[in-house]
Every structure is written in structure tokens, then in C-alpha cells.
Length: 160
Image (cartoon, rainbow, N blue to C red):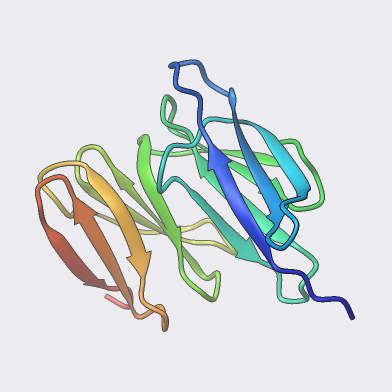
């Protein structure tokens, strides 16, 4: 079995046009492009991925800055597999290490928490006074950390 390390890169257009960005998967040793996913314009902290359990690929999620839409790609196809309409535009997203939960932050300071497998929205709450700029789950997935333009960093219990 040949193991391969890869890196996922997302680029966005500098103009306000939608869909001019690109998500690419590269071999970290050679720099060779392994896959390229188009029709996205995800900004920093707005791209996440979920690996499949059998190492056959997974899903890439990319929140779009101009629309309340989340583009979903599979590693096997370079086109959008699914467009998910969101309650608000997301400014950042994160997925826990097990791929169970996806969290999204907004410009209004709200955080949304979804179950990945079903798409059920578990919770939404006013977390900050200003835009949420970054979200990260702890390694064990028990807590979600959020950073905001209000200079606050918060830790949220996922089970609550």
C-alpha cells in the first residue's frame, strides 16, 4: 500500500464575483495537483473537510461569502455535489475530528451547530457581539472554541 500525504488549499477571488475561487488537493512531497474543485469563493476559515472511514476520500465543505450557501464536494467529483441553503451567511466553519458535527459562525456573532450525518440543526446561539472569525473543536470533540472581532474567545460545551 502506497501512503500519500496531501494538503488541501482554498483560494478566493479578490473581486466580489462569486465562483472564481478554487479548492485544490496537492501531493505534499511533489506539489502535484491531485484534484481541483471549482465554483467556489470561500474566504479564510470557510473551508473544511470530512474524511471517509475507509480512506476512500470524503467531503469538502466551503461556505460562500456572498450567499448563505454551503457548497459540498466529494473527493471523487470536481463539481459541486450539493448546495446547502443556510439560515445566514457564514464567516467561518469547523468540523470535529470524528466528522460528527459542523459549526458555523456569522457576521452577527451567532454560532450554528449541525449534525453532519443528518443535517439536523442542533443549536444556534448568540455567541459574540461582533463577527465570529474562527471556530475550532477540541481534539476529543467535547468543546467548541470561538474567536471574534469583539476580541473575545469562548469555549462552548458541545453536549450542552
